[in-house]
Every structure is written in C-alpha cells, then in structure tokens.
Length: 118
Image (tube, rainbow, N blue to C red; front, side):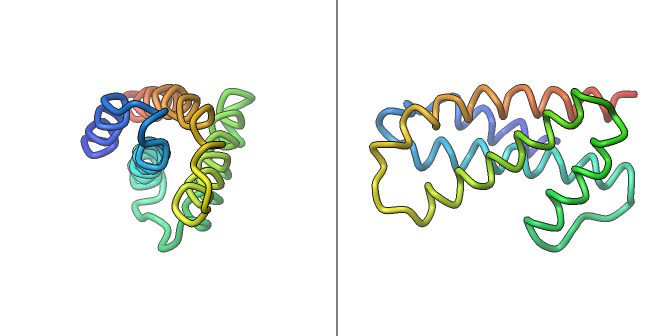
C-alpha cells in the first residue's frame, strides 16, 4: 500500500493537460499496487499478469457488493486507459481521461485501504 500511495501522490502532482500519459500510468499503477496488497491479504499471493490481477481482484470485489464491483470495473478501465496511454499515438484525447483517472485512483486506493484495515 505504501507504493500505491506514493504513486498516487506522484500522479496528483502532475498536470493531466501537460503529461496525460504519465498521469494515467501512475494512476493505474497506484491502483495495481493497492489491488496487489488486497490480494496478498486475501490469497497470500499476487497474480503474475495484469489480467490475472484484475480478474482476481474482481472475484474478491464481487462478494463485497456494488461498491466492490464498481471499484473492480474502475481497475479494468484504468488498465485499458493505461494501454492507450502507453501504446497509443495521440495524447490529445487523453487529457480529460487522465484527470478522471486520478480521481478514480484516489477512490480505489482509499477503498483498498479500508479493506485492509478491517
């Protein structure tokens, strides 16, 4: 969780209009590491791939009700956006999404923190 928090702080310190790819990348990895911490608590291991981690987190979140499912979908969206940011050509269409990714990452990290504190 410490790494998730550090990455989130880094994302929050950047301007999504100037460096949208970096914001998206950092936001996703903040979520990725928060989800990894939850998986370590619930399964004692993490998935070896991004897809595996997202799927495993989704299975845990499914039993947590609608809020859990919303956060699982947010993680999935964040990975899709990160792939666009990392491998896409145009950054112009990422600016608005990048700003939203910070907000989603913040809520996601807080949600994972709450799961770990119970």
